Image 1: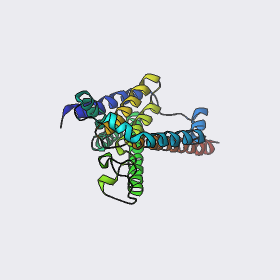
Image 2: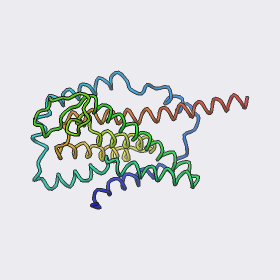
Image 3: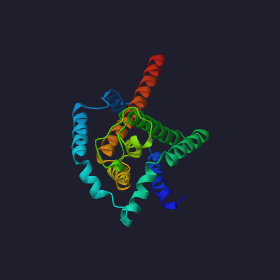
Image 4: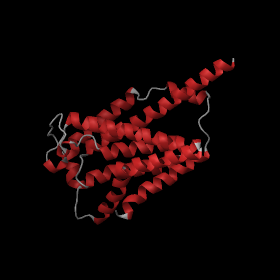
Length: 243
């Protein structure tokens, strides 16, 4: 297993570790606001669908420009991106850290990693379901508009990109845990590199990664919103018992 493939995810975990300096979310007005906000606004939905549609129209052109087997630099960048969105690295690592946090009694470590794991699992499951239903052929078919609905064949599992979906779920989950814009830039940059990697390796079309990014972000939002509602419910019950 090449060391470079593990490096980006390790970097991501180190960045996430900075969030452990913060305390667990408190029951305050911000928590209530987050719990009651819609997970997806109409404007965001329109934006994702419009961007995906534009990408569909440009899929073949962009594939011809981005996919270059002779590009060594692009190959190196792809190795980094593929690792950050690879469930074989992500899920065991997050599960292990969550277990360590639970056993050690670290609410911060357990909270950060468990929420990231839940976000990643939801994103991954969503991607698999959509892939199977839509059944789009991968770029190797040289035709961006070939679909075989309800197919379980890997060649027909292009839309959306699972790696990209997972990467953006992780980026969103970690970004919500850490205060500061530079951390957000780092996480989302890694996720964007994952999207580029899937296109560079000719595994996905542009529209696959664009829609996958939207699914990943939505998955993490759902998990974090659910956690906020649970926290809100616990504190309401606690307050009523105290009263």
